[in-house]
Length: 255
Length: 301
Image (cartoon, rainbow over all chains, first blue to last red; front, side):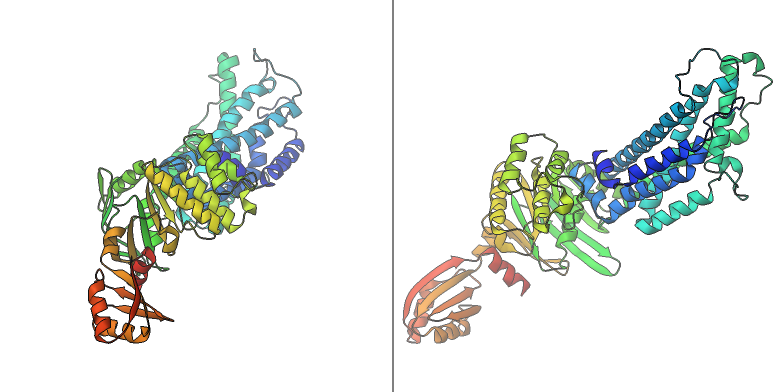
């Protein structure tokens, strides 16, 4: 983690991402009274920033480090297997990505609310931002795991920094659902950003009703198959791509 | 630790980097010599598990690894790696780390005295607190050497360890090699400058175009041939006669001195008899066993 944060995250990348993130967070107000999606579209607003951040940091940590001989140096110096190294690198990057997004979430939370919410009973959905916020964080973890695994598999598969960066950006930006328009080819629930927003919305409403209005649960709409498909797409892809990345590094001839 | 290669072949496309290489590293300080492109670095990379050969067997301690079973090969090298230290040909150090930070990061034993000794003896005290990105190639090499031995490994693999180093540091390295070898560490050192390891190496091999052309314990290799230093009134005539009669395989004349290289241990009496027979006066005779550099030069010419 020390190597990853100090050497792979070249300044001013972290500072720049935080600055842009704070500007993005501060330029929107998601606290619409009576709406059911407080904070849930924070990920959607930040998706391009998240994609570019993961692309640059990921490609530097995996692909560029491989080209510069730093991957070999790390697993040899630490006297560990390649698979263990890849898993540690993945975990280090994941923790750093999560810390960054949590910092932005934290800023957003207090910027919009300005108070500590009580976790007692809520009369209205719009009064329960903490719940929506927590579900959004859970979903962000899944998204970051997916993107981290994707950039690892691409980097260890291609092993050329520029090409890896382009392939990752091409795939993620093509499959991202932007605020102004969506891709007609990719189903909405699979789109990065917009799909995440839909997942958070569905599950937030469902969990809110389950916790605070059990009587309305039967009448309210539960998450449907597309929500589960969207979640499964991210989780399964994260796991499959993680093991694919591991296998690619383990078998690679690094001379 | 027993380290033995049998029939190891490694190809990069159409290039044959290692051609049926069989080596038994029997020494404590094993020297792999060869010119550029002879396969030394590939050999070190195979032992480090950085690259995988297409054919061959590797014995590491009690484990015998075959290329047919790739998974076992990878696992065998991975488990051996826990007791190894490495300095590769093109190391990738973290440019934003300080030198001392890298040493600390790579150390599994957290032995401050040992780390301090490395820092001092490799003359890194002044630059160790600075970021590696600003180092000269010599400084970077020193950090690499320090990193490779900071955990006091059982086996040390070095590729061109004296490249870019100043003379005092080269001498310090010999000291480290001697101390660690005495404590039980096995060294495998790839180099094309054998003179840096004359005093410490006890086993050597010479590689050429991916093949092993000479290997064995240095005392055995050196015993088979020697150098004869002769001072005479007619050195050129003496040199010519020594070559003609087969007493020497090479002769070099420097003023009144002749340096003769023999294939077998030199027979001084036979030589003096030959000199007398052609009427040449011999004033001084001395014999020296072949140095590593001599053996290397002989193998690659």
